[in-house]
Image (cartoon, rainbow, N blue to C red):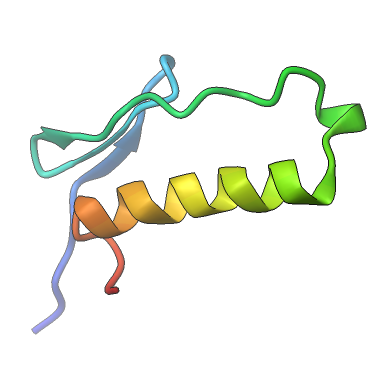
Amino acid sequence: MPYFNDVHLTPGSKITANGKQGPVIADHVDPATASSAEIATKQNQILAVLRDLRIIKE
């Protein structure tokens, strides 16, 4: 039997799943000039929220 999460991205950059809301993930100030380290940090923030909301496994 498949399992489905009710996952949404809100206009305020929040990720929600099954009624639980993650923290705001801010945009890069200037994506055109973001360093590799800044991009990796942002990706890690997104992954941490997805794990906390149990959208993906640890």
